[in-house]
Amino acid sequence: MPYPHSNIPETDIDAQEPAQVPPPINKPTWIEILKHTALFVATFACVTFVGIIYVGQDVGAESYFDMWPHGALFASLLLAFLATHEFGHYFAAVYHKVRVTLPYFIPIPLGIGTLGAVIRIKEQIQSTKKLYDVGISGPIAGFIVSLGILLYGFATLPDPSFIENFSGHEAVINHIQETRTFPDEAPETPDGVGSIIIGNTLLYSFLASFFENVPPMYEMFHYPFLFAGWLGLFFTALNLMPIGQLDGGHILYSLIGFKKHQQAARICFAGLTLLAGIEAIPFLYLQFSEWLPGYEFSSTVIWAGILFFLMRKAFHRAHEWIAPLWALSLMGSVGYLYLLGGGLEEAGSLIWVVWCFFLVYFVKIEHPPVIYEQHLSPRRRVLGWISMVVFILCISPSPISVLN
Image (tube, rainbow, N blue to C red; front, side, top):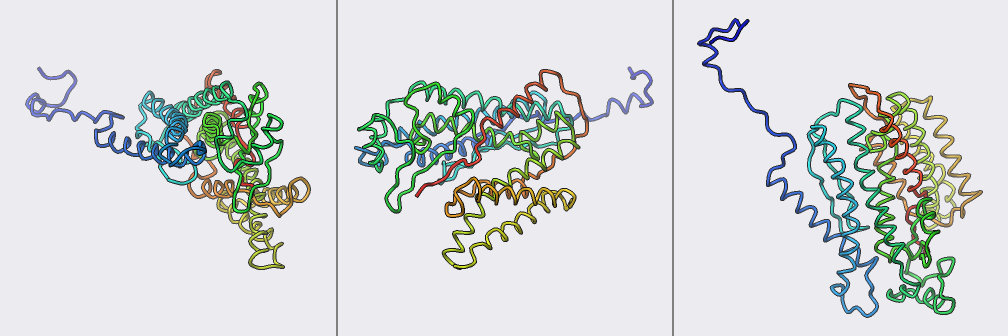
């Protein structure tokens, strides 16, 4: 029989083609699963390889193969954090029926063996509630796993003689054998040998105060649970920066809205450039002292120019923001180096310089507006502000440096 209130003749209805069933959302194909699995395996191999360099107990080992279980343990811990973080995002997106890819793990046989992992959102998230849930699920899940790894590492610490399993630590070993404690400061190393110093954080320092035999930050990277836990918490803090489309940007945008987030993101980025200046100015100073003696103090002028163009790009030429934040950032960097820091003769890593360029050219500083602005529930708001506290507790102004 014909449908009521229809102007379509019965014969036309019978001739209609069956409705097209839309493809299922977030149902990966076997090819996609194999591709993502291959990336994970490659990343595991790379992290295991470089992990041997950090946590491989090389005293008595005849080859790298003898130390692969140490590297594999480090890789398992670090990738447990990365996988938990990314699948936190993934399952939140699946719950809200947002089209999303499986996590892409990024292998690289340098540094810590990976550049992390990412998922790709295939559509614009149109409401702040969904944006918030997808944004916060990864950091919260990853934070819990990293905190568990770190606490287990603290609870199972060996005595200081553990460092005797690693070569090239003769001065530290001699001090431990005499006093049964670590030296307060990193001893001088032979020419051409560097000591990696991991930057302390508020949370790490607080937790370490409850345990004995905690290694100093210049030896911490030999302890797989401590190093993997610290890295997990630090990467959580990087993602929680309230800038652009980082997880923290999604969260803070959902909490305070577009206009206030724009202001907060610009101020946060200016603080980040202050840290970058503390790295960049000594680095340029030392390059000039080696290649163009007499022009060392041009390092500040060059950084001032780089900083201006960075902010000009980041703030879309809004000079009412560029001028004051540029001046404050530059004065803060120079003031710290001359009044509080070690001067210009010691250069750390360039982590914050690289991160600033990455944010400006890839992530962007300001969050794009969301179509449907929704008021978050009290529980979501509390958890969102807690995540901002986690950012402060887990970030390090000087994450990694090398003492020669």
